[in-house]
Image (cartoon, rainbow, N blue to C red; front, side, top):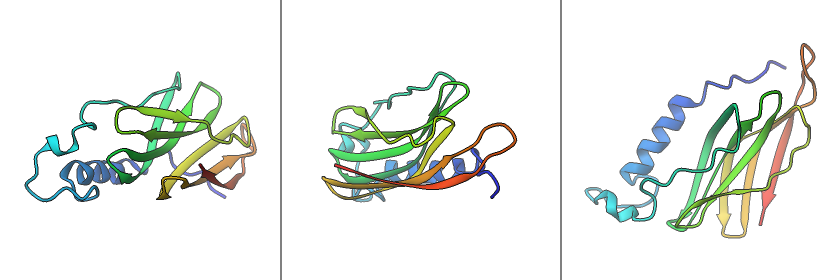
Length: 140
């Protein structure tokens, strides 16, 4: 199986960010000011990696409950990254790391405040031998 590109999601992510800012995905009526998202403006999520931090998907349940997933890297390993917005700040949520070589979350869905699902992959190899396996996580 070919290794997934780490750069392919940027145009889609940019569209999602623009739609969220425009209120399309958050339910803010057209013409509403940015202040309608009073707690979202200017708050940056954590970047735990020393050599790479990527967010690939966001799911919004309410103004006080949103999730973002992706990965972070500390040089030789990539770990799954899950963040939760509580209405004030983004906080990192512990996520399973099934392999020390590579873990990555690519999509998240919030069913309810206590039912959050994320999917991605974990990599079982290093160097020239690498195989990606499916990864599905449920939180809360």
